[in-house]
Image (cartoon, rainbow, N blue to C red):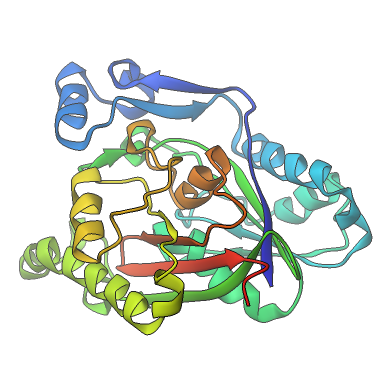
Length: 301
């Protein structure tokens, strides 16, 4: 199984400076300065379209580049962070795929791993033994859903094609979690909330170090590293502690927001690594899940 392509939807997308987010994110001038000073965030990518159109743009763009998919069978997987942002009473996801000529594909939604869902979904879907399209992209239903204490959320519809062959071979996927912290931080016991402040970072470092230690051949090639786009100071510390700070993907940019579980694909789509490069992607979320994916050039033996 390999990754053939990643497509980033562009419909009505704009980069909005943080001092212009009073309506969409509910932050004032003081908060905007705080996000810039402490987290390096100067703007947020937003898309003035409906949630459905955000995803339709990403999916149609990918299929237009690979029209042969209409003659194949496969699985459409929508990965999401929020559990409440889709219409359960309608067959909306199958409708999206039908609109681009893939109505005969199976469809499913993957969630419950929060912002790690974009990579955790590949861990699951690769086991199905069929080509699949990973679709991701969300819109917050309220300004409070667009902001976290460590960063602001943005909007990006992305799609990725996985099938036999491809530009990059899927070398491996990894998923784990810290079960002590399965509830929302606002609902945690005080002791758990305090412990999370250190154990999240330590757990992510341990997760990454374990993957590196288990595959020296892959990491000896110096893969391009694609982290998620949130809490830039923490990511910098984690990369250094795990020995992964020497080849950061040029498409990575915490300045334009955290795109729920689309970050890794957004970064790859903005600056696709060279065909002879290996790629290592990782993400994390509330809960606390950690997920990672290793891609290597198709020609590597």
